[in-house]
Amino acid sequence: MFWNQQVETLPRTDMATWQNHKLNKVIERVYEKSLLYSRRMEDRDLQPAKIKGVEDLVKLPFTTRQDLADNYPYGMLTMPVSGVAYIHSNQSSKTTLTSMSYTNNDLVMWTELMSRLLVAGGVNQTSVFQVAMNGKSCPESFGLYNGARQLNATVLPITGEEGIKQAKVLQDFGVTGVFTTPEYMLKLSQEMREKGMEPTELPLQTIFCNIQPGGEMVCEKIQKEYQVQVVEIYGMDDVFGMGIGGECHYLDGLHLQEDCFYPEIIEPLSGEALPVGERGELVLTSLTLEAMPLIRYRTGIQGYLDDGKCPCGRTLIRFKKG
Image (cartoon, rainbow, N blue to C red):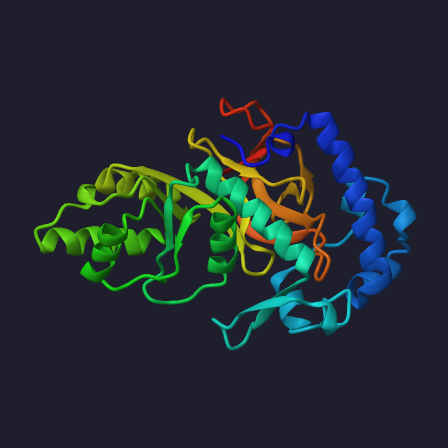
């Protein structure tokens, strides 16, 4: 199933044309409106006309989490704060505070991307969907809930209860799809068994988890516990929240939303761009964000790109960890 079949199955040549067009626009934007990027481009004697397509991205420096921290909270904006519709801030570290700002158009795109990923994982208008994060709110929930609502799924805005209370929520409301962390679901299954309950008795059909190191083994363990499909999705508070990529039901790599994020793989130490199929660090350039476009953002996640055909029919390039 697809949410946006035209984009998700776009021929590779057409996707390349789109990416080059959007890159030209975003480079013009940051050159004119971003103090950080205009300064960096001027230091390298680079004008927008010299960045003709994605092959020229290597001429530009990387953006790092430290850049976001150094320019917190508004230094990366390409517009007045009055043009910003929504902000989420990462307050988990007192020394590296970061924030991400969105325009209304950015929020529309965030919803679009989440709808694509949820449909790829099996959510539809008959689903009951919850974000379960042990009672804590999370920036991801905003995009997840909007994406589910756009699918006309039933959304349960309870952020997750402790222990058996969460099992009761899942059972009482007939929750079929849940986004959570692997640790949370493994702890829940343990507590259920301690109370004489079986995780397989829950109405769940799909468990969505954020990607983590060693995720394949953890996902297999969760799948064994609950006997349902476990789908990994990917996002970063620094870049976009959840929505950058996600698995389909074939579970063979993360389909990256490359109409909105251009991916590169680099050698982590030298920064050299690597060809498709070689392992290195994932680097992302946002192609559609208005408030805070990020150019060549180093994610720190290791893996490789696979542009081969996926049996699901999606032509979006896949990122495979490891």
